[in-house]
Amino acid sequence: MTAETVSGRTALITGASAGIGKAFAEVFAAKGWNVVLTARRTGRLEALASELASKHKITATPIAADLADPEGVQRLVAEIGSRGLIIDGLVNNAGYGVPGYYARTAWKDQKDFLQVLVTAPCELTHALLPGMIERRFGRIVNVASVAGLMPGTPGHTLYAASKAFMVKFSESLLLENRKHNVLTSALCPGFTYTEFHDVAGVRQRVAKFGKGWWSTAEEVAEAGYDGVIQGRPIVITGGRYKLIVAIMKLLPEPLALRMVAGRSRSFRAE
Ligand SMILES: NC(=O)c1ccc[n+]([C@@H]2O[C@H](COP(=O)([O-])OP(=O)(O)OC[C@H]3O[C@@H](n4cnc5c(N)ncnc54)[C@H](OP(=O)(O)O)[C@@H]3O)[C@@H](O)[C@H]2O)c1
Image (cartoon, rainbow, N blue to C red; front, top):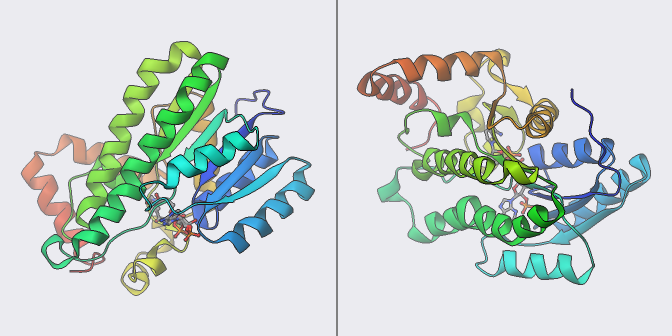
């Protein structure tokens, strides 16, 4: 693991009230970063902030924000500014899935999904990036998914598309800003033990995948942290997923599509 001096620097982590975001907060704090934790569940953020502050002797600031609100990012950035916080690290992590086939879902659900998983990370990055460039230091992790590196699936229709978007967005940001010492990485986990599948209501469906398919949130966050400080454009967690992604790239698209569709039907809700 590459060590770098981060004492006194502050990272903003979205979706820090649970799962991978919470694990990222723990990893950043353990490395000596101050953290700003955001999500909707204030109680959880406050409890995590006070735990991290006393455990790691850092400053941890909880700020509630609903990223589905089109003004959520603007308000969050204003709140950060009014507290005099300077953000040098950003983890765009908040996310969830919308179960079901596209035609059967409500547009409001898809619109909110795009707001949280695509527009909010883009807007947040756009607001914080100029300061990082000016200070010649920035570390940005966009939490994507192996789904973004593979063909689309039936069900959770915009999920793979949104994650593929985050992968390409991360690559472009890295190329544009590496010269300013602002590094961006797309973190692509496979199945991870978090609340994600409970929120999507597919816990029973995914339970049929054995332990070898799963990582812990801590493993994923550690890999994401190491990946961004090493300037790796894409970080895939788990050897099994690296192999699957590599094989998929070699297959003709129609065959890859058929294979992924067959497999995903067993866990994606119609
Ligand atoms: N778990 C997996 O298998 C897996 C695999 C690949 C990628 N991922 C990605 O990892 C990221 C984190 O997911 P997770 O697995 O850690 O799920 P999780 O345990 O359900 O956590 C999701 C986080 O997102 C926040 N969030 C959801 N909607 C929000 C909103 N409208 N405004 C603000 N925050 C919101 C939640 O906080 P509040 O509810 O408190 O707002 C929570 O902190 C997601 O981008 C997901 O797509 C997960």
